[in-house]
Length: 443
Image (cartoon, rainbow, N blue to C red; front, side, top):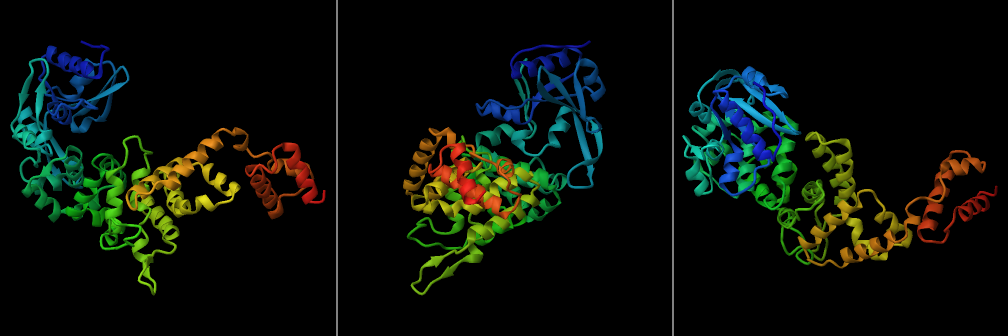
């Protein structure tokens, strides 16, 4: 028997479930999709649990992937969507803080007991509109409580990433963490060091999303995870700033405030520029004779620290470069109104300028609240967009070689001068640019 249907994602998931039940198997929605639907939130994914063995699932559906077959998990592909179908199981012998050494197939009540948190341990049959709850998940949903299923220490030791997932779920759902669960989390926070950098990075990227990013940072600190994951942020907690420019107080408070006002339609790396832009302030802090606080060069040192942090978390080379440059240049914005036209336009044309501008706006709103420079830059960017002829250099190195110049520092200097004159609109045509080079180089 092979089944194929096409409809909405939820409808497709129901048809997969129906197909399993028609074939004589038990099958239910499970986990986050049940939790979200009970909260009135549309799930992004639908996971299914069944007593069908992986080979049974593969025989029922035309397209499947064996991503976790030895753990009883098969992906069913359906018109471009993927659905995780897992066989009811119990697990034991966690040897690496991530994977069980032994999996035994079981019933769905036993399967519920192996899951992480009670609100993720609910089963739902949409065909009969029936909820199955052996872990008191419904009660915790009503009280907005995140509680481990069974012994929290055992759950965290089984999969060490659950430490960070507890923080992420509590922040994302705006739930309180039940006291025993939170005590176990703090006591065993060091186990997060066993988790791969890639898994940690992915969880942190989900954690630092609006509107729960600021609470996520607070929970990392309260749970003691911050010291293991982003220890560079710990010194910011007690690092005071000038009240004239930073009435919010410490660097940590500044970072937290920026995270709290981050818009939904933000650049995907904005949370990381927020977290890292002032990361070097504690080590560059100084006080002059008048009692004023300074952080000379913190942007340059911060760029180096940012690179180290992002490499540790296995970010891509392109993402690292983007964040590092934004951190490096973020203090440049304060001088933009005094810049030469060419310098300002070079700034506006930087490939990461949109991220830099978003960072600057929140930097202001998270401190003194003045947006005059931001508004000036938005205006200048609009004016520049109306002159697309300025986006492309009038001449390049090949043009200068054809004039008889050889590659050298002089050629680079001439190209830079021509570009400056183009951006300041002193030279507006290719012909004029080439004529200027001939005169300048005495060709």
